[in-house]
Length: 440
Ligand SMILES: NC(=O)c1ccc[n+]([C@@H]2O[C@H](COP(=O)([O-])OP(=O)(O)OC[C@H]3O[C@@H](n4cnc5c(N)ncnc54)[C@H](O)[C@@H]3O)[C@@H](O)[C@H]2O)c1
Image (tube, rainbow, N blue to C red):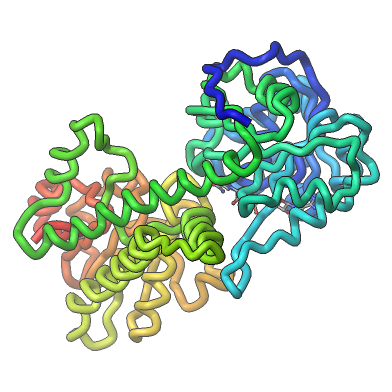
């Protein structure tokens, strides 16, 4: 099928009965926004704890504006929750699958959640329904799922999701684009029409292209971040300043500012697994994805570099204490999956450093990934008695601290800002030693 950018010109979408399978970081904002657009949405969530939370009108995860939107559409009667995919789909004309597609131990994408959701709902689908995969899946999966469901009277489509946690609601209400892949353009247009109130440009294409667009987008973002990190290490060697350098690049519209920030490395639930998946997918075709392999190597090197810099500052101290600000993989989310901040904490623990951490979304250290970390409930407590505080997640509240107070509670008044967000002059005025990534 020819790729067609329709600039939002799709058939007018009336109120449609929809189903969304999986109420996680993608499924819940998707369902809430489709309900806000006026559709009737039945959401299936099979985790009993999450289902109970949703049933009480609360979001199981932290996302700005999500709970308010959820309550709005629940009150309007546009959204209901059920506990299984099979119970959600009876009346649905279009069904969005938003279940996890994690990386398995051998690096391949684990499609078991997707297959389970699709096969369990298959006998209950109405004739003519469209099953849309929003989960990120290896190229070819949408077609394969069709065969697996054994329902030739049902269509399949791919509608990859580009939202970012932290701004998921705003981005779902106003997406930069809607991509729909299907082998039948009528099917694609029917899916795209659901989003017409977003006024987003629409790209209609075949399933393989839609699936590939998602991987290509994340690959490109990872390359930009790795480039920024590689440049930051170069800056440290030659006496340049990465913040000024990225300003100097970003005003050039061909380059821009987005995803051009130094940091402790990229992580989260998507970039690492999607990049690994794209590299794995290219192997059977003898395509060496050297660029992406290098982006991954650079990312690992950046984390090593951050840990090395921390240890070089505290390594000579007996029983050093390091305070960490931030544990999530970025600000605005409670998501710690593949978080560089957690990886830094674990590496420090391994080097016998006492780690005391504060993150606004973390209230206890009970989860496995936080084992050994002393969790405290504010930034000052994390700095208490520390020889170094390392800012790892760019939460805005870290920019508004009382620097004299921070300096007064630390054993050695020294801050390492891996996100380059703090006002270095303000810190220095409070006699705090300031260092960051990408400055000599
Ligand atoms: N998190 C992101 O920022 C993001 C962005 C774009 C795309 N994606 C992709 O979207 C997909 C979902 O990611 P996520 O972060 O929302 O995952 P998630 O783990 O937050 O949510 C998935 C939800 O699906 C539920 N679930 C699993 N199987 C189910 C079933 N059979 N019936 C009902 N519920 C079921 C789980 O209990 C969970 O609540 C993945 O493929 C991911 O790669 C994620």
